[in-house]
Each structure stands twice: as C-alpha cells, then as structure tokens.
Image 1 (cartoon, rainbow over the protein chains, first blue to last red):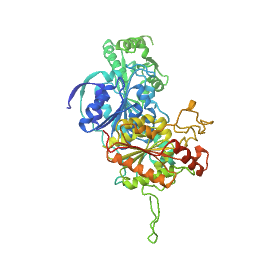
Image 2: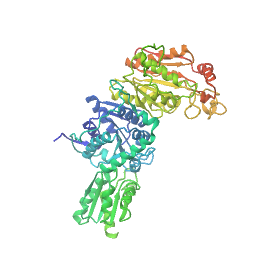
Image 3: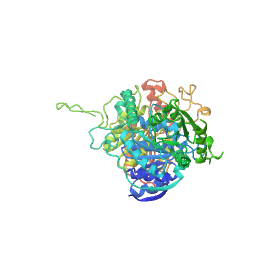
Image 4: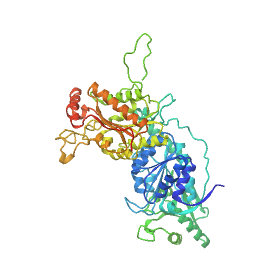
Length: 359
Length: 257
C-alpha cells in the first residue's frame, strides 16, 4: 500500500507525472490549473527536475516539443484558452511522432469565457484542435485517484505510440480534494527512443526531428504511418466503465465531473426502482463506440450529461445510429445563470424520471 | 563530409567536417549556402559537432537542417528559442544548442520568444539570417526591409507611414541583461566572412562557458526578393544594407552581474 494524501485533482496531476518518471515541466499560470504549475515549481527542483515558467502557452508547448525531441518524459498543462494556443504544436508533434503529455483543465468558453467549470473543449480535444489529419489520445478521469493513474497511463501511451496524449480534466476535478493513494504503475516494456536528438555523441548517424528523409522526400509515408497508428490505437486502447447497464431501460453517457454527478444520480434513483445505467468513456479518443452501439440494441433511451451545448452527444448519436432516443442535459441545465452554475444530481434525476415516464 | 580516399592525391581544399555533403537547395547568388558554411566552420573550429543540436525554423534557413551535420530539431515558425530551451534544460545543460532563424522567424512572429529566452537567462546561441525580406514565400516585406525598398507587399517601396521602420535586432538584444554577446556580420568579402566566423566562435563560446546568450546577425543577399542578379544583390548588401545595419560587436561581456 502506498502513502495516502488528501489532495486536489490538480496536485494529483503532479504526483502522477512524478510517479511516471517525468522530470520536466513547462507551464504558464491560468485559472483553474494554477496548482499544477505551483506543484511542479515546488516539487521538481527537490528531485533534480526542470521546471520553467514560460512567457506564454505557445512557449510552454514548444519547450515541451524541444524536451521530448531529446527522448525525455515531459509535460505541460493549461486551461481552455491557453490550451487553444497550443494546438499548432500539438499537431506538429503528431506529425513528428513525438510522445508528449498535455493536461487541459477545462473552464468555460468560448474564448476568454469564464474561469469556472465547463466541459466545452470536448470537440476541440477529441477531433484534433490544430490543422491536418491527427487525433491525440484523450483520457478523461473522474476522480482524484483516477487523475493520478491516468497521468501515469498517459506517459506510457505516449511512449508506446510516439504520439501526443491529452488528459482532459475540468475545474471541478482540478479543485476538489479527495483521498489519493500513491503508487507506481508498471505498464510493461516500451520501444527504445533511438531517434532522439541528444547530440550525435558516439552514435554512427545523426538524428533529426522530424526524420529528415521523410521530411524532404516522402510525405505519403508520414500520412500512411499516421493512419496505421490511428487504427492500432482504435483497436487496442478504447477504455470505458459501465455501471448497472445489464437491466437498464435507459443509460446515461457522461465523462469527467458530469460522470461523477451521473453516478450519484444512479445511487439515488436505483433504490427507488428506476432502471437507469451509466456508460462512462475513459478514452474520449478513441471513443467507446462499440459498447454504446451494443447497448443501443436493448435500451430505448440515452441521456448525455455534459456541461456544454452538446459535443459528446454527437459521438453518442453516431454510435446509436437512430436505434434509440438520444437526449442531452447540457449547460442550460445549470442551477445558476452566472459562471458558477453547475448541473446537480437533482436535475439529472428529474430528467431521467421524465424520460423513463414519458418517452 | 565524406572525403574521397585517394592515397596518391593530396587534398588541398574540401568542405568543412560538419557539412553533410548534400546540395544546399538555394537560389543562385543567395548567401545562405555561405551562412551554412561559416556555421560549419565555426562548429569545426570549436570541435562541438558531436555535442551540438541545431534548431532550424521556418524559412529558407530551415534547409540548413540538411546541410549542417549535427543533430537537428525543426521548430515551428518563430519558436526556435523556446524549443532550444526545452532541449538544453531537459538535457541538464550539456548539449550546445543553437537556433538558426530568418528575419520573419525571429524579428516578426518570434520576436517575443527570443526576448523572453534571453530574459530567462538561457545559455543558447542564435544565428539570425537577415536578408531584408521574405525569400521563401516570394519576396514580401520583413520587419528588416529597408525604407523605400520594393517588395511584393510594398510595391511602391516601404513607406514608414504605412509599414513602419526597419528593426535593428542585434543592437536591441544587446540591451538585454541576459545577452552575453551580440554582433552583426556580413559575407560580402573574405574580410567580412572571417569577421563573421570570429563572431560565431565567440557567440558559441559564451554558451560553452555558461556566461549567457550569444547572438549573431548575418546580413545576407536574397537575389529573388531583390529581383537582381547575384553580383548586383551582393553590391546592394554592401551599399544599402550595411549602411542601415552597421557591422561589429554590440555586446561582449565576460560575466553577467
């Protein structure tokens, strides 16, 4: 058993990275993820790591690019608007096949929006917010412990596929405190980073990032290899969790803090006899299309709970293919008109009852 | 560079050790091939080929990734100093990291990046290729374009009321505390070439000694932007560019207090 702490989700990001062997962090303060920046500023120097406070998110992501090009584990984090500034380089790292970990602690948008919680970056994160054909792997935790575990998994997946991995958190998850048990997860062996630009040294050949020969001569190979990689990831890395869907008449689909709220809804409604289940995608890309498609053959309705005007709901509709009703409980169901508004289990319960009784 | 092994022949002249042997891909009369050579020679003289990592940016200078035989990372437009910081710091300060940047890359889109890298006290070296225009995209105005100079986006000449003034980067960066060395050279004569190589050696040395940022601006001719034959483009650099951008050292300190 590892050491136990009572800690915020943002600090769990830091512990996850350190337990994954990451010793390089580059970041710029932005609410609501400042605790991540401050954690690394405090903890990395103690263990011989490198922390740099950058002048912008543009530089954060480009320093990360430089660091991972040398083969080390490194990460950055930001929140929605700052994360938007990083898109060009995330796309470039997908092009260069580089392993990088980026955390987006979502806040309200569009644009400067609000500093408080929302889940409005789903489309940007899962469809690739930069230019060109790329999809970053996206992991969506829903508790402090899971943030810690998925950060470790993110580093593993980044190294396994040489591809950017995004961990999608939000202001609620980042700011809330929970118990965290610290331990390292061993995911198994990884390919050697013999492509890294570390200075030629004793190596017989020089390394360039991206590989100079594909860069100058063979663009098609880059596209073909990316396509193969996306297929391999889609075949092997889909992760999700189901809760009481076996006998369910309707199923909620939600990720992140909304999944937490939805799980509480289940806990309240099941004793009352309502047959409601929950599918919680853990990887948002690749999306767990198959389980939702299978479930759509035997339930009449899905309810998507997400704190946006409807982004995740499009992927659910694609999976359901019109076999069942797909309803959305989004940002309009917040309890306040101000930016502090949230979707509470009570509202979700009412919507579930409404659907079960009338649709 | 791979040298032909001929025991009966004596090699009188060849490419620098740090030259890959690939063709430079530049237009006739472009100075960038010479920029690559002078960098290669400086790297050879300092003996840092095996520990150097280059960062090339977006622009014709980016092709030097194929010319200079060190490890290289290709940065996005303007982001060289940030990428170089990531490389240098994550490797515990061990490699010698240099960026090659053009006047669009450094003086326009990446001006904030270079200033903040120097502000952070990075120990890096930047080679700034100033050819008074955007060659790669077909000859548009750069921040370093001279007044009255005709480009495709200043078709009647650069008018300061509309398009502002040329930026003197080497002088400006010399004012920053983190700069250990700042100089401007040209390649229009053997004398200027040798002086530029001396500047480069010193700019690398400041990094190697851990003193601070080393910066060298190199004035270059771009016959395509100027719509001139090579000899006239070279003369233009001598007559107009050097008059606007004086050659020499602007800062050279042994330590930063």
